[in-house]
Image (cartoon, rainbow, N blue to C red; front, side, top):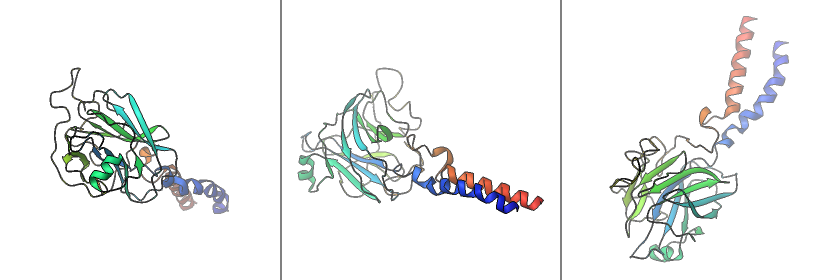
Length: 250
């Protein structure tokens, strides 16, 4: 009789457990590489995103949004990333020609010398990358690196920090050189990364690099408080533990 009375409760919580992992889907996508110019031509630019977690991206709309150093929006590009592990590139036609690849979407917003870009879900910032002297870094889950010079990229490394490297669109990022994001400091208080503790040394510490796992951190995910399992899973486990304890006492 005791088991029979508790079965309806299990039926209520089981769907919540099954839906738990879907809450976290799309949260591991990262800005992987940014190119500002090549051969002295600022028309040659691209933004590469990389996802290492075989996600499904079910929560349209998605966009790559570009901001200036003060956090003011400069424009955005609507994107439709495919399900599964891989790279997604938003690029200009000049960059496509320079590096002999074809981007997934057209970059029609000029990237500034000091600026930032965010991968967003319906306006929610999942991951942001700032480069150069940025006074207002955006996004709870963000990184920062030096502004890449002509013919160089700012590229995500396996440990989660960003180095200046040779451009490598649609390929694994090479190792490079870590540089201070804003060598002279900002005119107002603090360094550019002060709002994000640990940014200049090892930003996004513990998060997945370009090709490894990820810590699941994501202000827009709504799941970091319960890890990867989802709220429904924990409720079901708690209910099962309570039922087992009462059955033993009986």
